[in-house]
Length: 147
Length: 143
Image 1 (cartoon, rainbow over the protein chains, first blue to last red):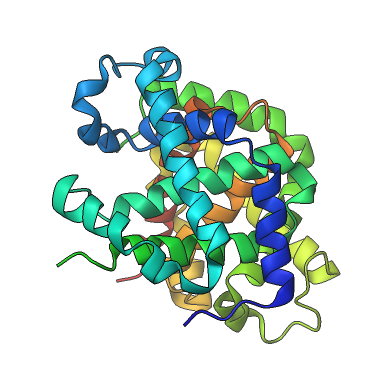
Image 2: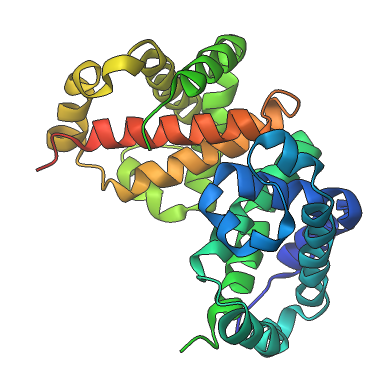
């Protein structure tokens, strides 16, 4: 089981508290599709992703960004058992969506960058450490049910 | 994943803007690398103070970022331009190349938090590609 210190719980909740899912979700997914273009493979039905402008303006990308970031709420609310909380999501991503689990790490990295740009200096090294530990646990849980 | 003309322009423009803050970027980057990835501290056991913002961290962070800035000037031949630095890292420092990815990630985080408006997704992808190329050039002499 993952051990969280009080400081880590504080840090993660404070970062989450500053995130507006409706704004940040779209930004994170768009950034992921731009910075790691091979991730576009999972979004063939989303219409045009041919250049930066079309990705940033794509309504399906924006809508799905919100879905994905809302999914992170589950982990924030169940920090002491992320593995089991995410078991159904892991099955979904493996069996139905067939997403290479390395993509979870890429999305997580984009989220960290977007959070850093939003929080600026408030994203201190110890908050970054707690946040990245949290995302690593989420990424691991999402990959757990793959076989 | 080599650098297109568009990438090179984005990289030159962005780093021209951020160059004046090299010391601050270096401090943020190295402080975060040592703190968030404590295994990287093993390379600095000879330092008195490895905490974020310490004088040694600040000084060395500046050295590292200035190295990246010099690589911007050598974008058309990174392998050639970084030959000496590669020999340094391979034979003297013997830094495991896996750590290049770690410091690159923290450099991206530092750039994002210091220059949120300039570090757009397009700049992000070009800089990420560039840093990957720099790391490859730095690894050239390892074996």
